[in-house]
Length: 304
Image (tube, rainbow, N blue to C red; front, side, top):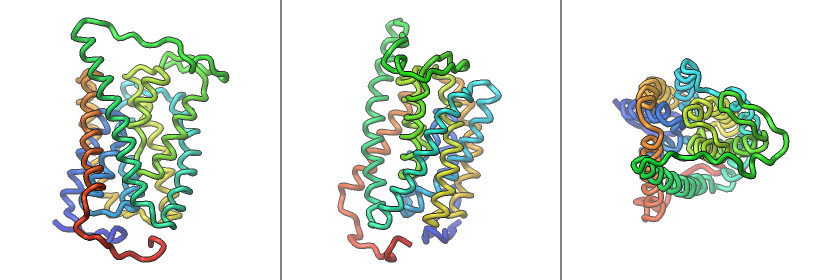
């Protein structure tokens, strides 16, 4: 069933969009990522313009993340205090990101920047997670118990706060900075930022894996909702028809994903996520390097 998307100005199969939404929803529930880092490139691949894909995808992330958070709240695996600290940085970062996005859109360079950002971030993070997960699996097989680093430079910073659910007593500066970075990326790349936030929360802040997923999703909801609103009011690039189709699939998928995630070990989850990140990165890099079938595309001046 072909459906015309008014803002994106392309026709796509409605069932394909529902399927993509469902697939990304499952991943969202399993890994605590908004799924934007996979969905946005997938939208590029089916012909949606990058500016529209980035702004619209944020809607779908809000829905699947909200659905995932409800499931995690029932299990009491959300650190609301940590989530609020991350959120402060996230909202400031999102506002900065939209300003940068608008500036680049005016220059006409936004498509290239978005794709380059994806290749760099996905490549680095996917590679690091893959190596770390392999080591963790090897250690588990040998019978070594993974030790958590108790004290590093983060514990020496001022403005300390107690996070009871995570069992941490650390400065609020690192979580705010993590939130800030994620907010900027959410605006420019159309991602929830979970693929950066989850590793940062585990390795930098030292949070337990079971709490990380729910807390990450909690922060993602608000930052991406704010980003969508800014994109809709300044860029007019949010395609409602596309958003609704992705939403329906995403909400259903998130509930399924949360159930699967509970049954799997942390190391297995991390290595699966790393493999997926690297696969998407490879495809995007390939598309950037290969000569396109059409060398020129016609578009209105100023990006509208």
